[in-house]
Image (tube, rainbow, N blue to C red; front, side):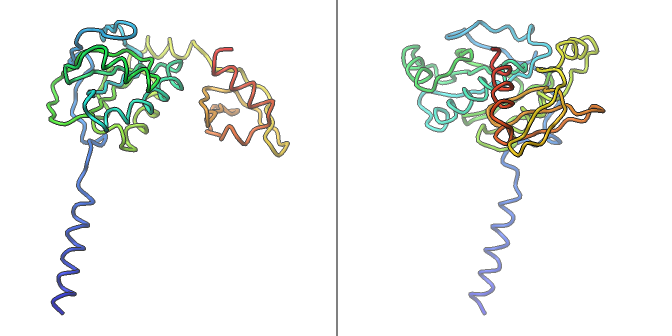
Length: 238
């Protein structure tokens, strides 16, 4: 009887721990703007001026050379950058342990990081641990802050990339860019035809705009070789 009671109490305690939020969800994110953040000295890559990133989806990661989880996050961010920079994503890595430049260079080279690296980044949200990541939408609003390994991080980035800016001029500029490929007929691996424009594509998924404006995410692997090749080349800017 006693063992059964203890088991139920432990199970209840474990359930309580599971519902505690590890990162900030959309409804919990405080109202902050990208312009409230300050970046340190530019170390690698292009110099970044936050005031000139209006209309971009911006990710800032505070990380450090002596932080194994931080180093583990870099290859993932490098791939995220490569897949989405043409869609308006800007990733900024802020080395926050005052490490030497040659030590930083060794690590980012191995991780194939091509996005800008700065010496630090600070804003109104205080935190004690790294890695710590912040996501800002096209209007410069903070939409997520937390751990880069949390599923909500990448979901927040993809959501921000799909959305338009609040400013009508910014939205107009985004719309004027048009689809990646104008509407045409595609073929899937089973020979069935799909008439749609291509809005965007990455290594795994293509976003089609169907007749009537409906958008559909479709696995790239399920398209015919010819359709997949055409879309992949367009996404790569070829």
